[in-house]
Image (cartoon, rainbow over all chains, first blue to last red; front, side, top):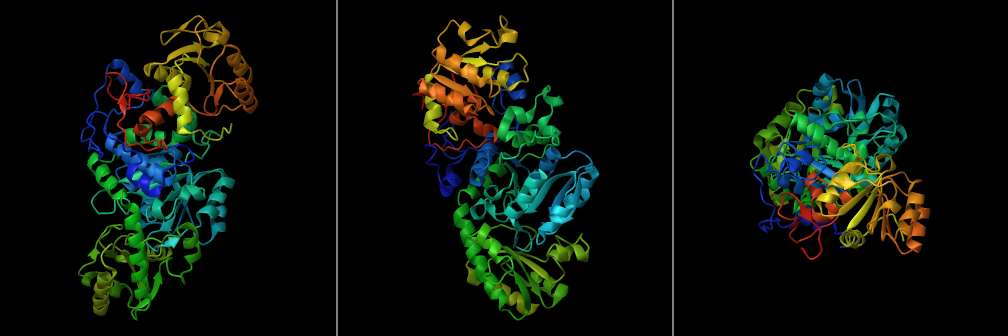
Length: 428
Length: 174
């Protein structure tokens, strides 16, 4: 295909990164369940270790099943390169390990996934990587938080759990002015609903465990490099711009150009910290990605039906879903994810904490568990689970107060999802 | 022509038609991108001739290093420029003089005026690209590093000779 005839989204979701196996002709991507790869000779081995040749060495750093998944997600997001990891948390660890030095700061939005809030607030502090919180609905709070130590901005396209849509473009302009990269967690939207790079993101991060894998079977994370950020402008990102001791003084940005960030996360972060994805999980997630468009559209359609029904229920005080016309984030949803606002959202119960506990205790088909983005509909009461380590004020700021229930609407018939919620609410 | 992007056919055509590549700025420092690219292109079967006044007369990766392009006794198909955008001007003129068919300027190197002169003289021009990276994108090796090649294919990749982990873009090998 020529430059002006680029394959479209649904074609990329099936074909990008995958070709028949060069030696066996296998058409589906094989599961390369091996730790290591033989070298032709010593010269070949040394070229691989010095990053002078392309090729596989050891599955902690790369694997052919994994690399198909990487190229596929890079293509769907419109990035230059990608790196798969053991989980979304592992992906975030490698991103900040590559970007930050001890003592550095980064700005993140209060409305993040609770697991990210914990990772940033506690584990990252041990590395002296210091998060500064700002508010998604008040862009000036981001600008005010910027200082010379700030090295990055971190946001979610659609925030978990509240389903709020973030003004990616507005925040990317702040990042440009500050000369720092914008990292966008695109887990809840997936590239089918929103492609943050088109709106100014420099790095996109995913938990593949959710809608991209889509079947609740496999853990995985992904870092996508947009290839847009100049890491060498002012020496603030020495991992990329300065000679790298563990590669004999090579400068990664100079050598790898617009894929340098993804490469650095792999050849330093993944090599030394070790959170690699398993080939089996990479395969299963790739199977999910092949039907991404079909699944995401049905997830969104079902979510609208459930959210509309909930907003008329007498025990429900509010529904936070940007897919509903009256929602305060509806305009942002129409701009950033016109095909749908995702399938994860929250609602409030008039009966507060106790009612939330009763609803999740009484569902029969919906599953009470801590994941999202499964073919199965899932329900959780964040205040007693995912967000229980946070103080009540932090819970409320994150959209996970005591009265809040989170849904991840699955692919069952929407009438059956509603019927199960109806009987569970009756018991609450 | 427009040099903001190149079609797969254009790049593939160049990489399939050239055999002898003069690499200006080839370095014996094993950490430099030019050393990486030279080693890779040699492995893919190209005859890479290093040009570097500071290392003239020495041997680099088994190849004699020449001081200037016009010192090279062989016919040169392509001149690959690992120098800055300004230096690319006179080097392009030299490439035209020695009868090269292609001028290739490396990542970050752009010289529009030089590109115009080369094209007027009938040469093909590529700017701000690396032949190693482009070869990798066309052969399928680029994806091994998680790179987005920007292309899809239902054809089986071709191995380079009897090697493991080395794919070729050679014509007729698909």
